[in-house]
Image (tube, rainbow, N blue to C red; front, side, top):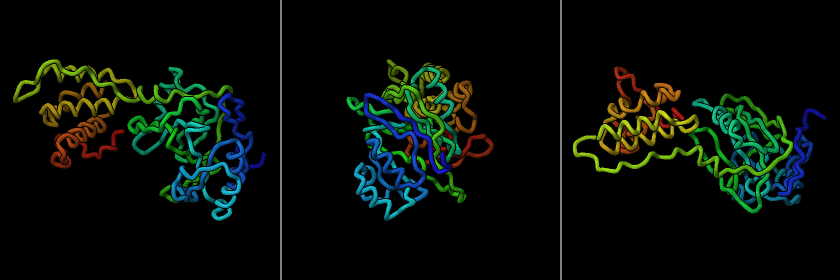
Length: 307
């Protein structure tokens, strides 16, 4: 196999998903190979994720004539696969503020991501797991940024090998196929989404007294935060902090009520305080006074800093 060929998995599956065993290095030939397997494609900007067609993934096609026309016009265009028909993708991100691999390991341990047919390493070091779509059960795309895990189904697309991405520092890296599965089957994306979405604790049964917050409610929220599982910790902390902010606690009071519980789950101090600050800013509709003084030790991080 030449260096320009990327190994793909052949998947004889009732869904009809059957990717080629080898993929040519030339983008046009690779796009045609995906299309021949029934996966609709469209071009994105070279070394980027921006669609080059007017309607993006809505223009995706398996028509060889249109595909040849697109890549004859832009031979180095990246290849985007429309998801939700032949393939679905679990996208595990790696960013400067965190990565989704701890969550992925938990999902794998619980047997929730078995059945992938192909594994692609993204240029950032993340992972795309390809699954055959269930034609009788379309699943919409969703994102859980705080877990750094997304799902690309109906209404989405993914950049595929042998496409490349140029980073802000000017370096370029390719999407690479790194493994294939033996018995591909559809993934239950709705279950994944529910697991990665924290379930709020039961609502208080009585009204808060005027002028303050019932200590039992703060304790209940603190206990709930302390039991949050990996993957739900930050989103759950944000939800609890919002409830205390709505009830009238100051940011310092919310921090005192929830910080110890949050730290016990493995969150860091900067991440915890940044999330609480973001929650108060969300509820009050202001910046809550902007950056907090260094004497309190609270980070003036953006809402994204602690994902």
